[in-house]
Length: 358
Image (cartoon, rainbow, N blue to C red; front, side, top):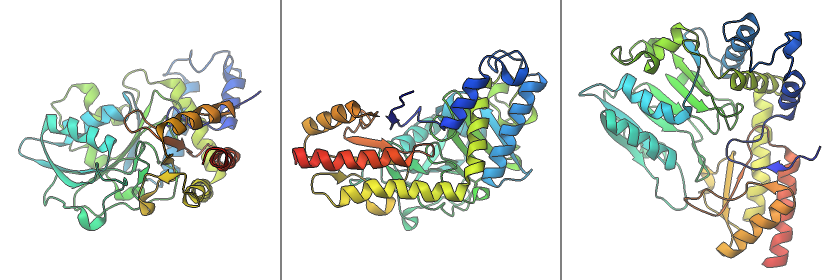
């Protein structure tokens, strides 16, 4: 079996161990005679998968019974709308930090619902970055404060959670469970699964129960967080197979250890950043103190060279290195499951490409 090094920003590389277990159980899950894709979400077999996934997430995030873990549909983009619909009422203000494309998307949806204060805005800064704590201007009495901890497109990452004075909501789609962090500082954390948690099709929401209870009760049933808490994310048929893969992925991560994962992630990213910094040919796009461990973004001297770099890298077994269509350049997404060997292969290729084209 020949597997490439997949640098995709999402859907992204998954743990081979999890994929192989799913392959072995695809047709007949643990002797049940059914695939996970075929079994009832009300049956005992799926119930065990679902509850293990919840328990794994709670353990890895260090959350107690005052938090609920939900598996919802519509991705993180659905959360952009659900959050203000639930918590931003008439005459109230929510604070948003806008540091890039995904912060912008969240702000856009919130403004449809109610009043938004931009606590900090560095979305157009070059090199890309996150705001300093001193730049964040929080509204007294805000109903919540929203941040994006890692901007996947720009390659900038927030290194510490801010003190906001209001319930903190964090979009952690691209760096969740990539490092030890005190998740209890947040009233709510959400993430699309397709980067660090599993395949696309499910979004993780971890929400403090007392905060969820403040949600707008006049919303349609499916749009209320309380509905999904009361029903353990089983009010409607959930994306069972995606949750099963999330279960396998979090089981793998528990075995590897979150601290070990953080150390490996930092080392992987540093290998590429060291190659960039040692070169006059490559140019990193994010400010050094905010460089992401998950998405390494850089440019070459010309767009023609970038096109050639992507083509030759693909021929050498390194796929999906093209930067986001809105910014161009090169993007190496190296999430938890991305192997160290793949980063080493990329760095060797970068040095050789510069030697041949610099």
